[in-house]
Structures are given as structure tokens and as C-alpha cells.
Length: 182
Image (cartoon, one colour):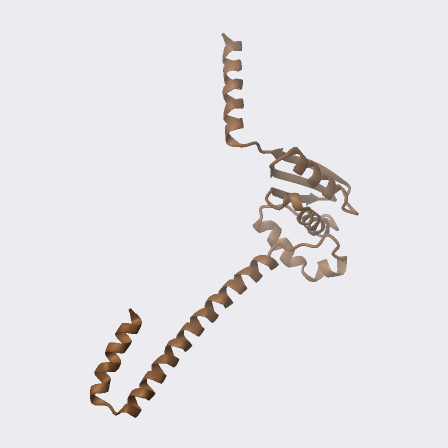
């Protein structure tokens, strides 16, 4: 449709311009379209790259981070913990343990889709949230237990079954409870 409009416009211009002007006009119009398309593509690619970089850099934790490297970004990690609704206590190494635990959990392939929150208070790592299976729960606890410098790990993870299983279990439990009361 744009090409047709361009051709009509060029034909109209041809009536009042010399052939040299028409050739230059066509070249300019072609280049303008190319530049606009290139700029639009470049902007879209840049936006996508920036979004992907932001997502990749955000919440990237390293289980093998040194204390010196942790100290460089300590404020950022504290902010990220608060934004995630997680607690980092006032213990001397609580923030460092939090970052190491987040990194250890991120390194476990089977846990990428889980919703695990990490709280650390006075060296005690608390895992809370939902996981899809008992195997994921076990893997998360194992990863947290592998963190050097922690005092202990508190497991408050919940294996979240699918909605149908929960509805059936609740119906059966309700029926059993109702029958027990009669």
C-alpha cells in the first residue's frame, strides 16, 4: 500500500519536475524509508537487548561469591531482598549468607520455576514458599544446607499440588469432617 502511494506521489511530481529531480527524489525517499526502518529495527533490538540484560542481571546470585565481592554490592542485595519480601537479619554475615543461598538455589536446575523465598537471621537460613514436588523441596533444603557459615536451615517450604487434587482433598476432608460431626 505504501509502495502504491509512493508511486502515485512520484507520478504527480513527475508532471512538474525534470527527470533528474525525479531520480533524486526517488533515491531520497528510498533512503528515508531504509533509514526509518533501520532505526526502528535498531531501537527494537536495543530495547529487547536492554530488557534481556536487565532481566539477566537482576537477581543473579553467585553461590561462590567472596565476602569482598559481596561487600561491593551489599546495598543492592539488601534492596533486592526487601523488594522480594525476604528478610535479611542484622547478624554479621546474614546478607552474605542470603546471597550465597540465593545463588545455590538458582544453580539447581529443577528449582527455576519454584517460588522460594530466603530469609536469614543470625545465621539461620529459612526457606519458605511453594515448590512443585517433594524432590524440589529436598533439592532446595540440600542446597541451603551446603552453605558454609550458616548455623542451621529451617524448612518452611510447601509442596503445592495442582488445583484439582486440592479440590478433591478438600471435598473429601470436608465430607469426612461433616460425617464425624453427625
